[in-house]
Length: 135
Image 1 (cartoon, helix red, strand yellow):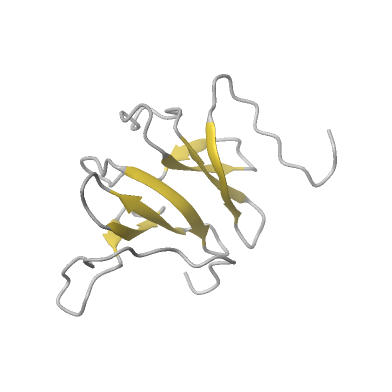
Image 2 (tube, rainbow, N blue to C red):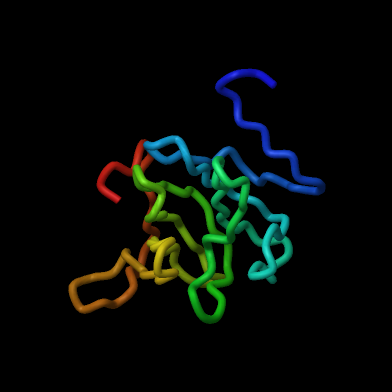
């Protein structure tokens, strides 16, 4: 293996774009795939967010709430320094793109592109490029 290079070996994984991020502590790697990699991912063909724990080797589905399903296409992940919070874009069919924030400890997912009343934004929201230092 080449030092300082991450290699994910998973049969039939289709990475859909180069949208990836690594936590500040270097333990967690988040990425987008249209291939279901977890039992909780039932949306074959839609882009979903996953987190790979580089210490344990586990892969978890991020773009799903603790209960129910989010659906749509998810992408552009950003991760906190400790890997506990992951922000990402989600686009539902015939709806605006929203920003979601997933707490990996509690499993809670919150739409964060809302106005002061909690209403979802009526236009495209996006994750700014660069590290998610404030997440």
